[in-house]
Length: 274
Image 1: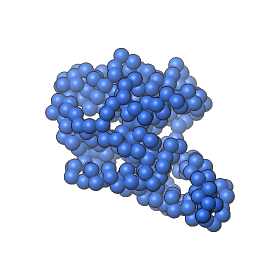
Image 2: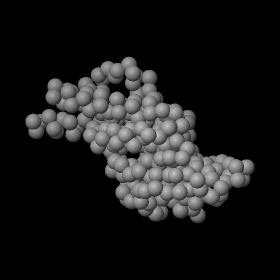
Image 3: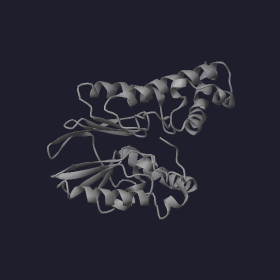
Image 4: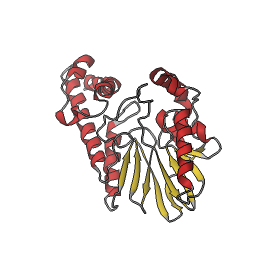
């Protein structure tokens, strides 16, 4: 739930694995080569006692660096993402790496931006007895991938969902994101959820994270719109009080100001046009 820092090794992303006797999928690879190496070691130790098959593919759910910087440790395994996400990784990976080295220090030693190699199409797939759906959406980024395991009730929601943590918005379109959350909720209603895995924050057996994210985005949109109409400047908006229900969330002191800095200029321009 924290922000990137040396103290946490920049380990703030939820990653996962679906292991079956017929094969294994890895979901997201973390913020660094070191994380990817440790992840691979943990997955290898998991497979044998559970009689799981070899790793067939690694999936990166969007273009942000903590989703794919560990790919470097999986070079001999197919690494896949949506086509738009791969384009974003290729375009922005160098800048991500520069920023990550500044924020994370030695935890990033030896890390190179390693975008997913192959584009994957959304659809329904069988992994052993698991009925898995890869669902494409957008809003958090231009190409957001959600993995839904209809057999187990596990959902990897990627960047669309944050739980008890302020969402990140550098590539966000709030209207599209809110629409994506409504569509995802409708899609998941028939499913008995055992684990909804957000981008950041606790894993829960319900849709609380989805509801929290939608609540925050609606509030943020209204705040920015009203502030622009009132003629407030950027520093004044950042200084406005945050509702109690969000005030104790992870990264509130760092991510909320970035939200405003990233999004507010567009609201100011829209207010001027009117």
